[in-house]
Length: 249
Length: 249
DNA sequence: CGTCAGTTTGACCTAGTTCAAGGCCAGTGG
DNA sequence: CCACTGGCCTTGAACTAGGTCAAACTGACG
Image 1 (cartoon, rainbow over the protein chains, first blue to last red):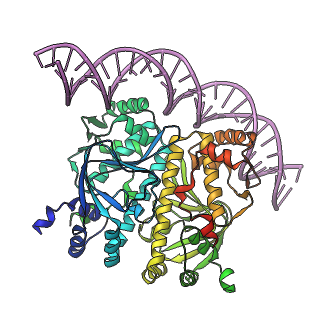
Image 2 (image 1 turned 180 degrees about the vertical axis):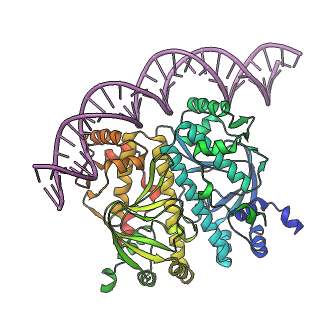
């Protein structure tokens, strides 16, 4: 078991376990996927709108994000991804990318051929189900993102995003107490929330002034979880995480 | 073949064929799914946030929509569904609903037990793939919806939504020339686009004044497709429709 | 003919944008 | 060791897209 814990794809297993139970055999199967690992500098596209990738990628370290660019130069971001996530699993069945995938900061990424995933799915229908489930959770997060951008104020949007990111990271063991890495500039934050940088800045200050969070040096600290949750109208059900007790097992 | 064309689930087959090819055997398998059909009045919930449905539903006629309600009473809609759509296929793997599904107008809905879908998936892995693919397209539409709400003006948002709805309906043969049914009130439109009713009204008038569309009596007519597309920044790639030539076959 | 749901209009208001300028590092190169 | 970048964050002032409230209008339907 020792070698499993130190395996390079361990973050993937941890992520899968945050939403479903895996047998030892299934873990073994996942870990033996043939991947090609690459470190990438920050702010770099990995896959672009219009590409037809033949592999999907797994975040091992760092942060990725997905976005679209409009004709007028505006950018909309619709997800952030941390260690263990497979941000472009959808490319397995949607041949042409309809958006871009890029690094926020320097990251380690594993590339996994579609064929290998397909074979894994064929052999382990349970894993295929979990992958499918993962893409469905992705969609559930998009739905909530729509609510966030469509119906919440700037202040609420930011609070909500912080809750979501923190909860997801906690589920895969990437938090340290009530802090987690959050190396995201205010400009990027604005593009994720449909806001201008200036207004993100001001709303952020309000969040700080009210003692809900601390955000500095790329570290987000939740100073008052209850009030932050309330401010963002956050309810974690849509993330479909296993209850912590089960996840612990 | 005659009985196939008049089969009650024919709209489902047509929808599946708009995104993937189906063999005769596969069509037969889909059509023989055991469903329970029900007509529902307009503006009625079918499944609610928090429910744990054991079936999913297929629109046979009419229009459904999915939405969430916020604590403060605001509503955000994130999709409309027409004949052939399976709006809550995700409930197959996400046990608890994170949103509501309701009728816009009086509609005919077929209910399909999860067990039957699972069995179909097991027997026909190609169909399972197509279903998966369908949920991925759902997610792609959500992504574009985020862009719409996050980064486009009211005028652009409405134009974009019209393009999307029209294109989707055309793909399943629900348009009549450059017109299609669009029995959606301005209030509902506002909740879909993150706008107030008043502002939807004014933007709509602009769209009309410029001769891009006609919308009256629940019928949407596209008067200038090119300019409407441009106004909404619409590019249909994300819908992952098969090219019309293939779909025709 | 009244009612009810939906649309339209007007007037006023505010959350958020835009533009432009400073401030604050951390890193680089002399 | 210091000056000089170049990101990023912060601030201020003016502006505008869109929201809110409230009333009038329209048409369908019993």
